[in-house]
Length: 115
Length: 110
Image (cartoon, rainbow over all chains, first blue to last red; front, top):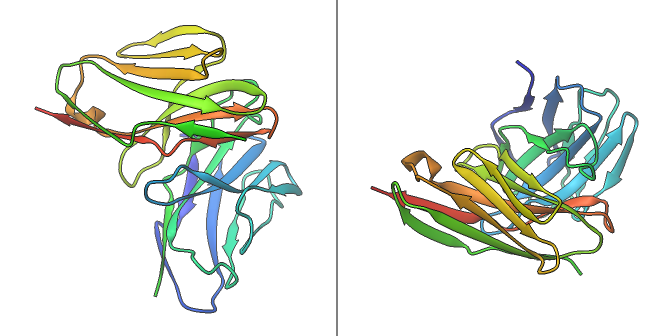
């Protein structure tokens, strides 16, 4: 079955530590996205990529980094510069940008907490 | 600016009908999506509207009025499994991205 796989499901970060969240899709989608979800708030866009080897900052990119070396993979690194990283992180992909009505398909998320 | 408003919480009875409203302001509107999200899980796509009117898909329908910046999601014959958050998201051509509302948490009671 095609889908988006995020790992790990739960992740703990120590002070000063960088951690990387994995996102893999086998839907052959060009576009991939990372969102952060906090209680009582909408999904906020961290980074997105419309094509391999290219990505753009979203609304809250500070303290995060990404890479898009393969079409299937879009890992997110939460760096020590992100002072409030505790949140639910969602990865998504779509065939296009959404302008044509293509829905985004989401992974099951990674819940990151601070030790 | 860009803004999406939805009620924070709603409750309804099993078997009933519920309407979840969404109002939006954005640059270059280019479509509105509704997603369902159960607690701790991934959002799943429910519907898409880009033209005014009603789109029906089984027990779920979604309505759009572009002139009023307004949409609603209508859920009929409510079931307990419909207890979830419902996210309204607007595609902004001006910002070239999908903008999400905070979601409406629906609780369905027997």
